[in-house]
Length: 384
Ligand code: PLP
Image 1: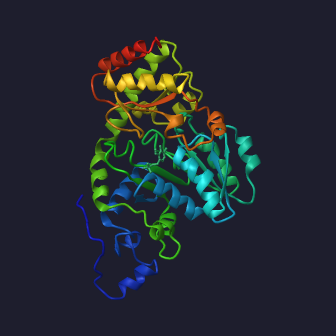
Image 2: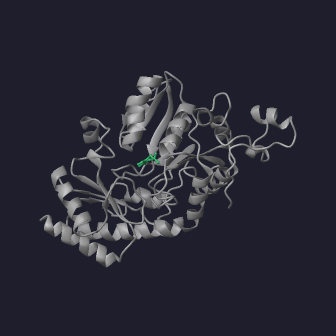
Image 3: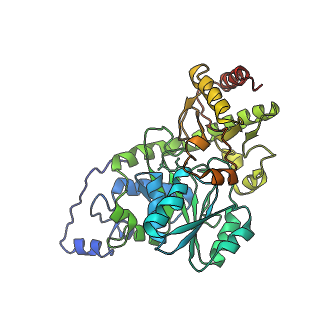
């Protein structure tokens, strides 16, 4: 793949420009490009690769995961509309739905436990337009029942949007009935913690809507991807399957060891996880495992911080940092970081306790070395 850096594109005949402006010509209709904030060939190429991974008809890439989420929702929703969202989602998405949209757009959201389908049906009104969930939730690691959510969405003519950031390759939401899949490419898909990016995987029609010159939220708000970023991410797609396998294998081992010590670990690959059987049934777990994230509840933020300090500064087990999907282990106390946007009440409802530490398990170092480091830190904190 080459980088097409041009911000503007020459047309060979004068009447092509009006045709592009009227939406009659563009990359989906045979490859005419207009301007870098509209489609770009390198970004379009990456988008088509990601569409293949997700099994969607089309896709387009954005400047961040939040750009993918906000432009998708702004495209689907008008003032007065309502969203039904899972009560356990990334803090930034929660803030967008809980604070920003009601204030700026008069779009309101019901946050509910999506594992109770009856609750969803109860909240649906004629104002409801979207059901929004994460395939594996941040940070509580619950697995959405995408098939039954899709059938509720279909019955009520709603759009089911699934953020699949935690489970690329493992879960294929489109095949399970989702309408739109979003990723923060910043995480596993890029995998190097050096790029912020996102993607919307959807129908060709929806991608055209996002790019409409009069009403497209991507085209008009402008958070499309830079071609150099697209080039870098595309180069990393070839080893995404290997990386996901390595993350999953390490996370499963560490989760099993923590469980053997009777510590409060949550990992969808453990048979006692509430959604273990669901993920086994819907996910490509034989090939890619149960994902790279696990949580450990230390009971208090103080204890969580003590453990993380030792893990980073004495044992060199990983880094205290938000984000996930990096080659090294990243760890953060969710309640005071990536879920801190949530009200205390909503955190409690979602089971995000103050001492919950989220680990994005990396694959550097030997597994034995990493487990010894973690064990030593747990011992130093008198947890074991
Ligand atoms: N979705 C999930 C599940 C996330 O964890 C995050 C960020 O942490 C985002 C979306 C937002 O992505 P970005 O930081 O690329 O905007």
